Image (cartoon, rainbow, N blue to C red):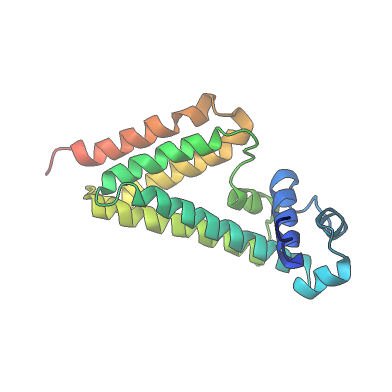
Length: 194
């Protein structure tokens, strides 16, 4: 028995997501998405009236998948916030060393869309702000001496690694993510009081 075929909307979104990530959002036209998804343009426009709507749906799905992944990492170390921080660094380092990794989808969007008012840019900024907020919550729960500073430092190191991976690969600067992040975490817990 053949697997059920996904809906036209799902095929459009899956195709656009793959192309947007691999090639770049601005480099991919709606004709290519329609052709490669096997969904005609009239049907495509019934689901997404503009390319911007399709971009927004792509980012919503990336956001959903990222936070699901993030929560799975945390769940594995539930009750130990410091271990959660260390695990986030480790799995991020693993992710950016995977073949085909082309950078963070949200950082890529920020590079492609300079217009402050563009919805895709706003979605990417909101995602990165949410990362910083969640890191802060974990740092606070872990008992860091200054959870805001540690969250900011980890956010900077993680985003730096995500942005550097397409340039340098898993070796070089990107390979320092876990070491730098661990060092910053340990400073927050090993520093003398007062």
